[in-house]
Length: 327
Image 1: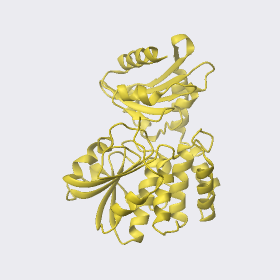
Image 2: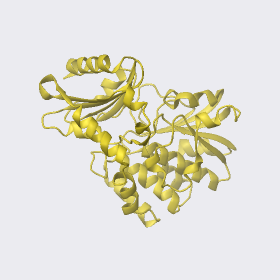
Image 3: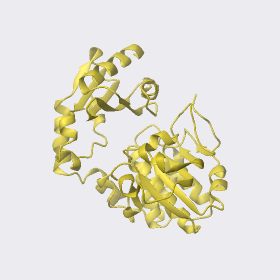
Image 4: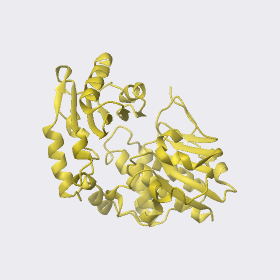
């Protein structure tokens, strides 16, 4: 069972009160929900006169560059050595600091940590936690914090939050699309978020490299276990190429999951020699979060990820075997 908490954002608000310098971060390879959440948190903290620094391990996704003040998002490689360790930390869209990657080295040993997340976990971390597994996204939780603080999101903040929500709800078509999040989306649009522009920039503004990479992924699809599992992959050579730098694979794995009869789909990429990352998706009753947990990863029951310390070919075999044991 995951950690259950009330819908109240009070622990988060009490944590923020009286702070002066805060590190705000999210998981490695952040998506729209993680980036939207940290940007909205910095906006809210600035309204209270709090100095907040956003630092993430990896390159901020290029597809999110249309968001206002995107320069707020600092990279670990640029900030390391330039800042003193932080005694106060907010982690958004991740259950613990291990998911921050190298950014964890910026956290002092005795730091107080607030975790804001909607992923199920058996090993929560933090001095304070606002974890609600029934929420659509971390941006939904940040919206609750902001409004409970008595703040009204402006246009920029509304677009940060709306972006995270539509990414994590699959444009309001996933099962986590509740009446609550639809109401919140309506309020964000009323405050200035532009659904047409955000959707256009996120889903219909691909580079030619991204489109070509989708074709490459589709050509790599293989079926396993009588057609119940599909895998697709990218080689280490491709993911370290210049072309890869302009590729955004968000949503790619869903093309494999959409194949008739497939219950589990995985998109694997060998990011280093002997190190392979897998994005997992499922339908029906298969829980990919439990699968990912056994491999050191995590996520949601229908969407999760993990890193396998194997080369691409071996990682695929290991993953197929793990799925076979659970089907």
